Length: 508
Image (cartoon, rainbow, N blue to C red; front, side, top):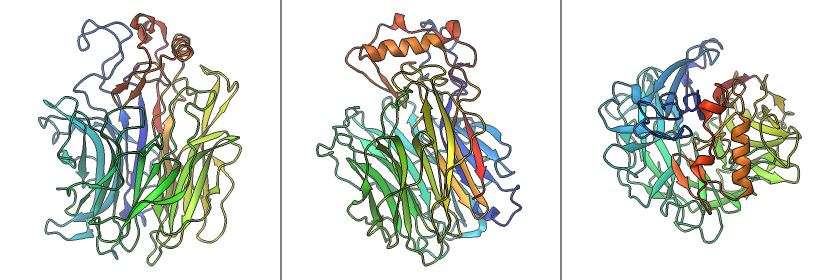
């Protein structure tokens, strides 16, 4: 029952040492925002004497889920939350979601990285710390047994302030044994210094680096100016990747462009952000639905030795709705091609994943929404499906292939404050030479609630919507009367707002 049945913003990682294993026996780890430990809506032992409509995030309850697979993602084991790990208990750290997982080589404890030691997984997540209300940190946990057990939380950001909200984190690992920085971990995020939703405050993209397997992280470096210079939507949505020569790339959205900054010295210094290509944010919300959207980029470097090719992908607005585009650089992000549109007429496309396989094949997957009546929203009005395209090392892009066997209804999702539908901010993709794995939000087992639909229409019609962003509420012109909010336990079906994360494997 909502909100315990709510998952979104999924991440997936594939053990690189499994590439020679049979295709059905590879280790994978996934993560997501997961509210499985949140108390049910309304009054009770945990929430106390609250209104029946209270479904808010409960203080001190984590939301970063862990799932593992040993059969290439066919079946999964729910490992609970990071907070359930014995190593986390008593540390006073509460996971806050926005997970990103990546594999790299395991260190030997003496500063040497080698796949001969095994593979280490890194889990990056937002977190709060008991006794420090209002402060948001980014922490990292590591696993050397494919996600079964995890290290204690490691603070990657040691300073915070009540005027700062750290968010939109991303993590990547240098996985090339030919790189002089083999094993180095790069963690980027946006530092919202004014703590507002207007997009007009100071919000630089930051980065920190670990050279010791995640035990410690360097002092953060600022990759962009702090102020947004009147662009209107600041700098958000960083994504990183590392090339085979150790060059690190961090891409993010800056105003009306996707940009990239580059480091050739293991993260010690970074170039000035340079444009990749133009972006016009997709509609928020997409016509026919009511969930928030974004056009954040994803960047991926060709891992083949000697390659300096890098790809970047994002969703941009067109007259036909959202379209996924891919830009290519063959000179280490110095110059970029005109973005190529890889999605088609499947619907309004959003939340892409991008990966490059060891053999140089490029894979892109995304979701797309179709609406019966684009001028409205509600239960049964729209459907979401997943699609994928690929490009071999030489040649063009394939036509989109549908991945989802069952469509999802975005109205079978909800923010915890019930004021909008909720699909998260991203999906992710991972590839090897045999194929690719796309993990995405899915509501096939959920149902909508007419009372919630009506409540959301009332808020939209009266300009009263409040965004529910990672437990931080941004208030609109007026706060609605709480008595008008429906109580899901009383007026909605049990499966209301049940969103899962699903993995689709495709073979190009």
